[in-house]
Length: 119
Image (cartoon, rainbow, N blue to C red; front, top):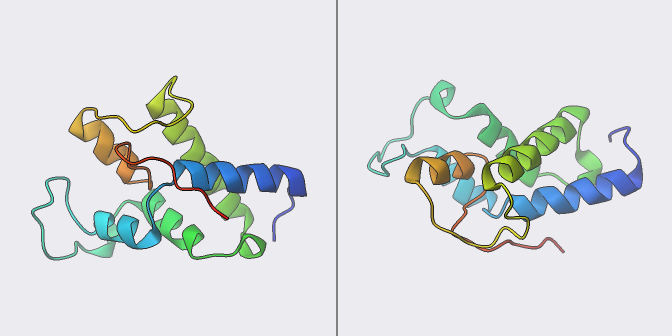
């Protein structure tokens, strides 16, 4: 469990699961492919994006099992997606440059998909 206040944790949990709109299975599969989608064999573990792997691990956890490192990762992902999406506060689906989409997908956000709410 982390040392951040419960209200702050609630807000972070909600925001993280709003910006991460890919399931752990979708993200894991994406991380095993290259950007062109042509690779069929998974790359060696050291070639897979570290941040995306940490997101997959967090998606498999309960809120009460999060570590301080998980919380830091969640803040990093939220900040990354919000920065890349710019003024699009509602995270409406939109097309963009393929490299931009691939960067976002590597942290669990597909900009072509609407948000997925956590219950």
